[in-house]
Image 1: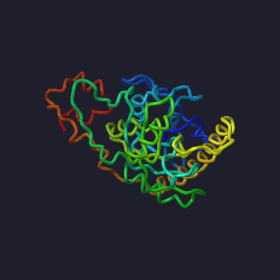
Image 2: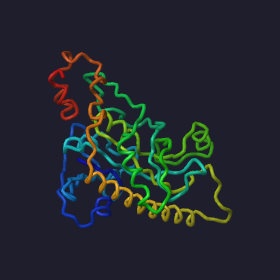
Image 3: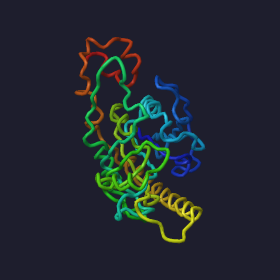
Image 4: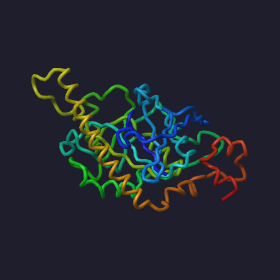
Length: 292
């Protein structure tokens, strides 16, 4: 089952007025950002979730990432396609273009970074934080989008909600960062702990603050330009996601090693994990509860 995480209205933009099932889900980690809406499209069920809530009410530090991923997992989602706006840290990635991100530098510090905060020790492998099969499928339909789609990029995930200083922006560039954003972590990390394949389409809206603005451009003009870039980049992302979903419906992906990501990640002796701990984590650990 495919899950989509993006902005408010992403489902409508992709699927129009297709009838939906709406699910309001309670999880061990609280309530998700929004109800999860499931559409049946060409015989395939697709779950959509608004990351920042309906009306964009959650700032990046307050998004209930754990509840969001858990809720999608509980509905049977096996693959997540996510989208998110970013600033560019390099000349090569221009506003309105798309990037199929392949690496992350995590600078967040106010967010719960793991599901498994008590009762057991879990160390999930994250060397390649995005599913290679999903990334390849997105890239295979890139020609159907009227913009440049970059095949890889390193995303620096900052805490926010404020933007970088020029010194910070230059530091991120020296680190090898190519994109700056606020939402991919811990979302991608939690998807791996939930054994869900995850890929991100990054929408470039601006050059961050390292690149000087043109002389004479005031703040209102700059904001209008960024909003315009976001609108066009969103249209491009919708076209790419629609093409990718059509491809996935026609030719579904098989099982991935990511679907067994916890098989070697649980370091605690299974016999020492209490029934209450297994119960608390529910769908995340249910296949391991029998000592498998």
